[in-house]
Length: 287
Image (cartoon, rainbow, N blue to C red; front, side, top):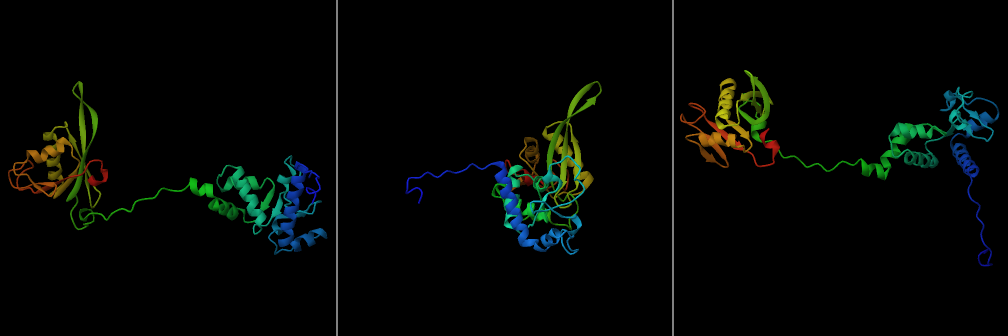
């Protein structure tokens, strides 16, 4: 109507005092809906009844008609709202909105930071649950803390779940190092060879004097001598590891693997050993 008459609307800017008064009015309305009996008792100068959740906090009714926490900090130099925070029921929508604003003000931090920010002015019963609920329903936090999708792992192969077999019946093999050791007055390189049992997860170590195939064959022979018969070894496609198969006199290929059998192979007499070579860049194939 005023615009139709050519009159201009004059809006008064919000001042800090007006914002504080609005905040107090919102809290008073929320308290009136939940703590009406407590307000009547405190207005008469009495204490709240023992069954009230406010009883153990010695609540007081301030001059502006707001229930505040009494406490023992009245003589401290803290701000008045910090010494006597306003009681705010958690079930009110106002408490949820105030908690959301505090959660944003502290930079979407954890529950304790939100509670510390809230208690500068308010005392919310059930504040822990409210802070957790606000963080759980925050879109920004859910997006920031979301975990990437995890692939569904395939079933374990049979050689990893056969518990009745002796250790190192099926194992994986790999090199690590070099290790610098002293030999006389000089320092030389040595390499560790690790054998891991697929079923029992036992570990066996050997020392290889070099990366040559002969040193690798000796390490496998020592493992066979100490740990008993080994049916299969899985490893990567290292040249020294593949060289074991090449050195075998009666080596033959079986479905992408190599089998060394008979009395003429490089690993000793009467041995039957199946070598599996994993694909490139697939680390978990070797155990």
